[in-house]
Length: 139
Image 1 (cartoon, rainbow, N blue to C red):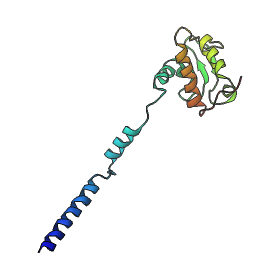
Image 2 (cartoon, rainbow, N blue to C red):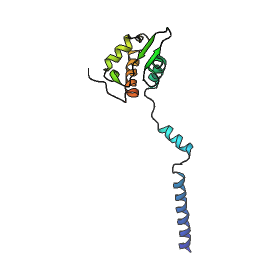
Image 3 (spheres, rainbow, N blue to C red):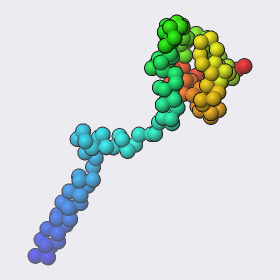
Image 4 (cartoon, rainbow, N blue to C red):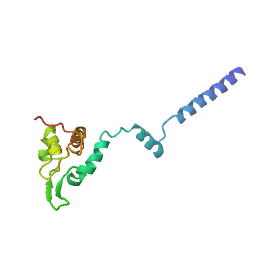
Protein backbone atom coordinates (compact mmCIF):
# COMPACT_ATOMS: atom_id res chain seq x y z
CA UNK A 1 0.00 0.00 0.00
CA UNK A 2 2.84 2.38 0.82
CA UNK A 3 4.36 1.71 -2.59
CA UNK A 4 1.05 2.65 -4.26
CA UNK A 5 0.79 5.92 -2.28
CA UNK A 6 4.38 6.72 -3.19
CA UNK A 7 3.56 6.23 -6.91
CA UNK A 8 0.50 8.50 -6.68
CA UNK A 9 2.51 11.24 -4.94
CA UNK A 10 5.34 10.93 -7.49
CA UNK A 11 2.87 11.09 -10.39
CA UNK A 12 1.17 14.17 -8.90
CA UNK A 13 4.54 15.91 -8.44
CA UNK A 14 5.57 15.08 -11.98
CA UNK A 15 2.27 16.41 -13.31
CA UNK A 16 2.65 19.62 -11.28
CA UNK A 17 6.20 20.17 -12.58
CA UNK A 18 5.20 19.59 -16.21
CA UNK A 19 2.24 21.94 -15.87
CA UNK A 20 4.40 24.64 -14.28
CA UNK A 21 6.98 24.35 -17.06
CA UNK A 22 4.34 24.73 -19.76
CA UNK A 23 2.94 27.93 -18.21
CA UNK A 24 6.43 29.51 -18.14
CA UNK A 25 7.01 29.01 -21.86
CA UNK A 26 6.66 32.11 -24.04
CA UNK A 27 3.33 32.51 -25.72
CA UNK A 28 3.09 32.73 -29.48
CA UNK A 29 0.10 35.05 -29.36
CA UNK A 30 0.50 38.38 -31.22
CA UNK A 31 0.08 40.40 -28.01
CA UNK A 32 2.85 38.52 -26.25
CA UNK A 33 5.13 38.78 -29.28
CA UNK A 34 4.69 42.55 -29.62
CA UNK A 35 5.29 43.11 -25.90
CA UNK A 36 8.42 41.00 -26.03
CA UNK A 37 9.87 42.81 -29.05
CA UNK A 38 9.00 46.21 -27.62
CA UNK A 39 10.83 45.51 -24.40
CA UNK A 40 13.89 44.26 -26.29
CA UNK A 41 14.09 47.09 -28.83
CA UNK A 42 16.98 49.50 -28.61
CA UNK A 43 16.37 53.22 -28.21
CA UNK A 44 16.85 55.44 -31.26
CA UNK A 45 20.22 57.11 -30.74
CA UNK A 46 19.27 59.69 -33.35
CA UNK A 47 15.84 60.63 -31.96
CA UNK A 48 16.81 64.20 -31.08
CA UNK A 49 18.73 64.90 -34.28
CA UNK A 50 15.99 63.24 -36.36
CA UNK A 51 13.68 65.99 -35.07
CA UNK A 52 16.21 68.63 -36.13
CA UNK A 53 16.52 67.05 -39.58
CA UNK A 54 12.74 66.97 -39.96
CA UNK A 55 12.44 70.64 -38.97
CA UNK A 56 15.49 72.19 -40.63
CA UNK A 57 16.62 69.90 -43.47
CA UNK A 58 13.82 67.71 -44.78
CA UNK A 59 12.06 70.42 -46.79
CA UNK A 60 15.08 70.68 -49.13
CA UNK A 61 16.99 67.41 -48.71
CA UNK A 62 13.88 65.21 -48.56
CA UNK A 63 12.68 62.54 -46.17
CA UNK A 64 15.23 60.06 -47.53
CA UNK A 65 18.12 62.45 -48.18
CA UNK A 66 17.68 62.31 -51.96
CA UNK A 67 17.58 66.08 -52.53
CA UNK A 68 16.36 67.18 -55.95
CA UNK A 69 14.77 70.33 -57.34
CA UNK A 70 13.34 72.64 -54.66
CA UNK A 71 11.49 75.93 -54.93
CA UNK A 72 12.01 78.20 -51.90
CA UNK A 73 9.36 80.53 -50.46
CA UNK A 74 10.96 83.51 -52.24
CA UNK A 75 10.68 81.70 -55.60
CA UNK A 76 14.35 80.72 -55.82
CA UNK A 77 14.86 77.34 -57.46
CA UNK A 78 17.61 75.06 -56.17
CA UNK A 79 18.95 71.68 -57.21
CA UNK A 80 19.72 70.15 -53.81
CA UNK A 81 22.32 67.35 -53.96
CA UNK A 82 21.57 63.88 -52.67
CA UNK A 83 23.27 62.64 -49.51
CA UNK A 84 23.05 59.13 -50.93
CA UNK A 85 25.34 59.32 -53.96
CA UNK A 86 27.93 61.27 -55.87
CA UNK A 87 30.15 63.86 -54.28
CA UNK A 88 28.26 63.79 -50.97
CA UNK A 89 29.81 60.39 -50.27
CA UNK A 90 33.32 61.75 -50.81
CA UNK A 91 33.09 64.80 -48.55
CA UNK A 92 34.85 64.53 -45.20
CA UNK A 93 32.90 65.47 -42.08
CA UNK A 94 34.75 68.81 -41.96
CA UNK A 95 33.17 69.79 -45.31
CA UNK A 96 29.71 68.93 -43.99
CA UNK A 97 30.37 70.90 -40.81
CA UNK A 98 31.51 73.95 -42.79
CA UNK A 99 28.45 73.80 -45.06
CA UNK A 100 26.03 73.43 -42.14
CA UNK A 101 27.75 76.17 -40.15
CA UNK A 102 28.29 78.76 -42.88
CA UNK A 103 25.74 77.73 -45.49
CA UNK A 104 26.24 78.65 -49.14
CA UNK A 105 25.00 77.61 -52.58
CA UNK A 106 21.44 78.40 -51.48
CA UNK A 107 21.72 76.64 -48.12
CA UNK A 108 21.22 78.83 -45.05
CA UNK A 109 23.82 79.01 -42.28
CA UNK A 110 22.96 77.22 -39.06
CA UNK A 111 25.76 78.51 -36.83
CA UNK A 112 23.24 80.55 -34.80
CA UNK A 113 20.47 77.92 -34.83
CA UNK A 114 22.34 74.72 -33.94
CA UNK A 115 25.05 73.89 -31.43
CA UNK A 116 28.31 72.27 -32.52
CA UNK A 117 27.13 69.02 -30.92
CA UNK A 118 23.84 69.12 -32.85
CA UNK A 119 25.72 69.73 -36.11
CA UNK A 120 28.10 66.83 -35.45
CA UNK A 121 25.16 64.58 -34.53
CA UNK A 122 23.45 65.64 -37.76
CA UNK A 123 26.54 64.58 -39.74
CA UNK A 124 26.56 61.19 -37.97
CA UNK A 125 22.84 60.86 -38.73
CA UNK A 126 23.42 61.59 -42.43
CA UNK A 127 26.25 59.06 -42.59
CA UNK A 128 24.19 56.36 -40.88
CA UNK A 129 20.75 56.93 -42.38
CA UNK A 130 21.56 58.05 -45.91
CA UNK A 131 25.03 56.66 -46.59
CA UNK A 132 24.64 53.17 -45.12
CA UNK A 133 27.00 53.88 -42.25
CA UNK A 134 29.85 54.86 -44.55
CA UNK A 135 32.87 56.18 -42.72
CA UNK A 136 33.94 59.70 -43.50
CA UNK A 137 36.61 59.74 -46.21
CA UNK A 138 40.11 60.85 -45.31
CA UNK A 139 40.84 64.52 -45.86
